[in-house]
Structure formats: structure tokens, C-alpha cells
Image 1 (tube, rainbow, N blue to C red):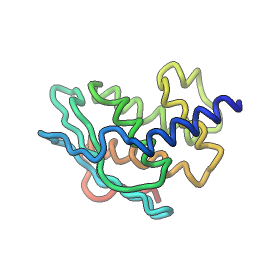
Image 2: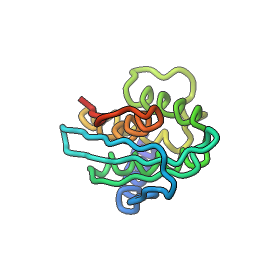
Image 3: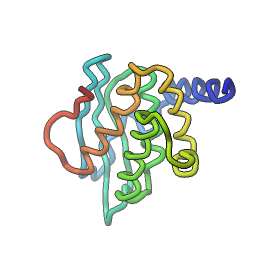
Image 4: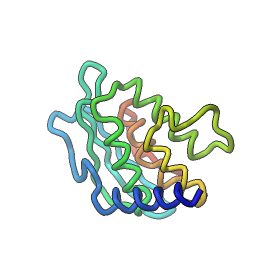
Length: 151
């Protein structure tokens, strides 16, 4: 378990210090959403370029704590080049990983390195930080109006 905790901390720190696809609004972006976590002030805009049901490019802008920034960075890496259906499935899987007591099956099978986010469960107040970018991406794909809020 210590190895997983160390990996969690290493990945979070790396993606916070060097976030991927940040600050970035892809050229030809056609889906965007604005997310806000009032508990800690995290605020992001997630931008996607979707064509033929594929997320051709994705990026984010804004500011947040280490966990929310790392989660957004990991999300952009995981979704670039994937189908919208896959992104929706990943949204549900990550949300379940972070909010459900028991997991059905092996989350690593689908989530791969995103399972490192499991470490957030040790800090219940930070779950909303880790899910903010995912909720914002989900809203962008559904072209929902208004700000996505974790409250």
C-alpha cells in the first residue's frame, strides 16, 4: 500500500508541476465548459475539439490546487484521440472510483494509470477537487450551459 501512496504522490506532484495540455484552448475547439469548486476555489475551463465522435484535441485553462490540476492533466492525456463514448465511460469510471465504497471489478483494467487517483479517497474533502475537471469535461460534451459547480 505504501508503494501505491508513493506513486500517487509522485504522479500528483508531476502533473501539478508540469500539467499536460495546459494552458490550452485547441484550435477549432467546439465544446467548452467552465467549472468551479467553491470549497477550495479551483476554477477551470475545459476545451475540446470533437469531430466524427472523436476527441481530436483537449486542453484546459484556469487555476486550482495540486489535486485538481493533476486530475485535469491526467484527464486530458487519457481522452485525447478517444471517442466521446469512451470519454463518457471514463467519466463514470473515475467518478465511481473516487466516490463509491466498493469497486466492481478491477478499476485498473479500464482506467490504467488513472487508478492513481484512488489515493484521493484518503482525503474525502479533496474528492471534489479531483472530480472537477471530469464534471466540467462531461458538461462540455453535453454542451450544458452555465457553470459546473461541485456543490
